[in-house]
Image (cartoon, rainbow, N blue to C red; front, side):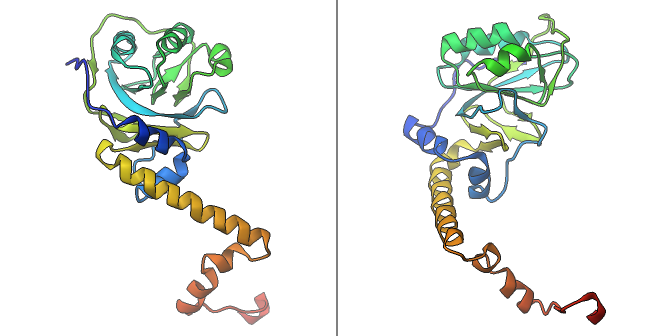
Length: 227
């Protein structure tokens, strides 16, 4: 168990650039890597999150270190909480109010949360894998700002967490600038595809699907009787 007070973060311009892209584009920009398990999704439906990860590892049924991390995190940081079980909620209304007052950027956890009536109405981005009314104790230390695994993905302090209704993607800190540029290029390409679809072209043609079938010597027939 160890608590690290501070860590290196990407610059604000890089985070702002990543925030212009969605989680899916960032995932593609990273070579379709570092997507958290699909169970990890927003509690407040329209929430989006983008910020450097302040990581937390908690023991089963205990969220003491989440409270500590909330005090250590800087404005804009996203708490990335790794759990060993979903026995008790690691987050709820009071932690949300506290985080909002401190200007934190959001919460992402593969554990569960509670007080969802409040969380769903709050503008504070909250992403979790489950919901449970069971409360957590505050008795056993864990770790803060060490490498963790959340939703099946390695997260280090300072990595950028990007999330929306499609899911959560983790951007390694050292790849943040290149990923922001690649994600922006993907968005431009998709904008061009939209225009061409609106002009009457089909997506199968634009993506070369027919060429793929031809090159693979797939047999194409007019009806089941011809098979």
